[in-house]
Amino acid sequence: TRRAWRHHGRRAVLMLPGPLTTGEFYQIPVDGYRGRDIVASEGAFAFTADFEGTGESSYPVDGRSPSQASQVEAMRVVVRYIRLIRDVRRVDVLGESWGGGVAAELCADAHRVRSCVLASMLYETPTDFANMTFRSPGFHGFLDSMPDGYLNTFPDLYLGLTMPMEPAVSAWTLVEMPGRYTTVPLYDVFDLPCFDATSSRVPGLLVQGALDPNQTIDDALALVADYGDEMALTVIEGGGHIPRTEPPPMNDVYWDSVLDFLDL
Image 1 (cartoon, one colour):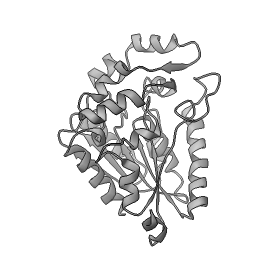
Image 2 (cartoon, helix red, strand yellow):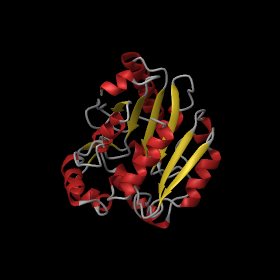
Image 3 (tube, rainbow, N blue to C red):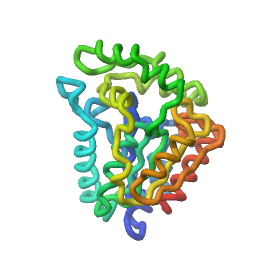
C-alpha cells in the first residue's frame, strides 16, 4: 500500500507456509483471513513464498532433495531480494509448522532479519495423536512408497485441518491446497527437533493454540526456553493447530498478537 512506502523505517514481512500448503494459504480470500492484506494494511510490505517442490516454485526430479538446509538458503536469497527491491533494512519473518523451522534458522542473521514469529510449531515432544498419525510407522512407509519423493495430495487429506474452519475458508482450502508437494517436511518430523532454535538472534514470538492436537503447551515452553533470543508466548484459548484459519475470535487474536509484536 502507499502507507508501506511512506512508513517511517520501512518494514517488510515474509510469511512461510507449513507442509502441504503454499504461500497462498496466508491469503485466503475471505474477510478476516487475507493475511497479506492484513499485514499490508498496517503499513508493511507483505510477502509469501513457496518452498522448492511446492506451489509455483521449482520441482527437482527427486522430491526428497529439497532439504531444510537448502530451503533456508533459498529463503535467505528471498530476504536479500526483499531488502533490495523495497529498500528495507531488516525483514520480519513469520513461519508456521515446518516453515517455522526455516524461519527460526533465517533469524540467526540479525543483520538482515528484524524479528521472528513462529506458529503451530512441533518442537520436541509430540502428542499421542501426532505419534499415531503423521509420525506412525505406517505413514513413514506410505511416504517411502512415493517413487519420486512427491506426495500428490487430495481434499480428504485436509479434512482434519479444515474441520474447525468456517465453511467459506474450508471450501477454499479443499479446492486450492491439494497439489504436488515434496515429502521432506513430512519425513523431518520423525527426527525432532528438526530445526535449531538456539541459533536465532532476534526477538521472537511463539503463537500456540491451546487445543492443538499435535503439540502441547509444555512443548511450546520448551521451544521458548531454547530459543536463542528472548521469545514471548501467546496461547490462544480455544485455538487448534492453525488459529489464524479458525473462526473468530481465534483468527482475530492471532493477528492482533502478531501485529502487536511486530509493532507496525
